[in-house]
Length: 162
Image (cartoon, rainbow, N blue to C red; front, side, top):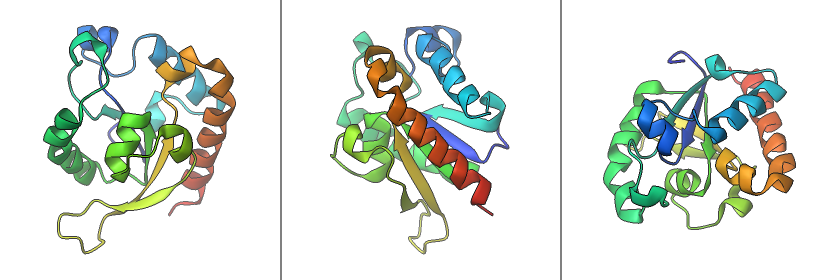
């Protein structure tokens, strides 16, 4: 939803997403839908994109070179969208947005305001809330409780934001 207050940024398309040309449509996307539903939201409440527009060979994690190459495009995408909050799904997304090498398990649940403006005047300070990627949750279902906590924090912020 281009008018949504929440910008959800994932890593890169998987096989199903690459084939269909839509983000989060495979098994991880189905889990994302259930996650959103668990807090009273659906895809119409979020705007979804990825840090890479293509699937890396072998469905591997995007390389640092790939993410840095496309960072200016994602940054401009964020500037044009100007959401109230960014929900960064997964380590690649969180590390890029927060300019960090810290792992997602330590970053998740910690909201950080980041200046996305070009001139560094602070005119586009946006909160970034990292969380666990649904694909990771499919492999580690015991971490769903933490992801749910992040979703609740996201909902609380959106309700309070002007």
